[in-house]
Length: 104
Image (tube, rainbow, N blue to C red; front, side):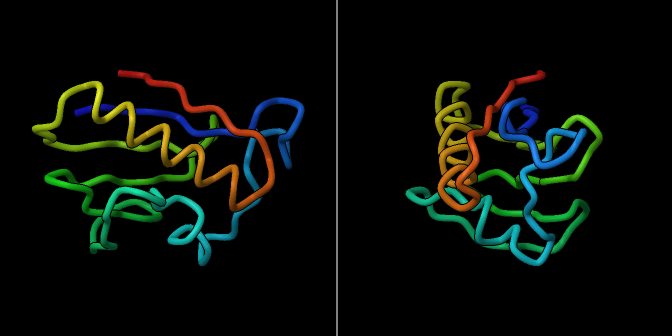
């Protein structure tokens, strides 16, 4: 399992929680990687995707958006690359600079 926090850079935050200002109904557009195939699936979290062989959950937390890659057979480098792709998509969608921080 690999976990990340996606959040606005301090100078681009919408609120005190470093949020990106994306309504939940737009998360499917804002946080799906642009170049890696994914599909929305049912499950816990505010958004859940199947990316390659991993279920990926997105949850709105105090520190930002928690992204969890579960039971992945992907290399750490591949998971990091997909997380970076999600960060880039979030920036493109919101027009705000974001950062992605690996927490595990």
